[in-house]
Image: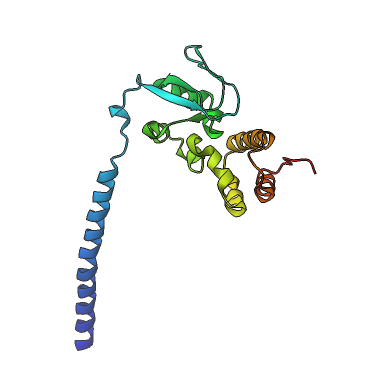
Length: 190
């Protein structure tokens, strides 16, 4: 009997020891969640204007199915102001603009990505103001980074690479070969 009692006391001691630890973990986890403060759709004004940048290397046109309004970006990184409600509609009617990272947002409006629920498409996207920085990376880093990009950003990167090659801005054969391998295309004649 003495053995049974000692086992019970060990079990109760273990449960007493683990319970406060779990509560401590829960309270620290709750504190972390409270600090992040999730976006609550009811608190967001859907009529607010959001600056949307063109992530496509060229002219980009979005036509609203709701209002028939046309939004035209003439070149890469151009900005058009679009109502948040319209971006929500675009998510339903023209999801490829998000999937291909053709709609891009500045740091101040990055929350829109989470609000619209399209974060999975932007997880590995290059920010437009850092787009050319990829050419300064090592060949290994280039291959790794490019492999994670959306098809739309890969196409934009290919276009930008060709521009810089024509201008003589990229002269490293290792960088060129890494880009060719990662993009799956031939960028220079051999």
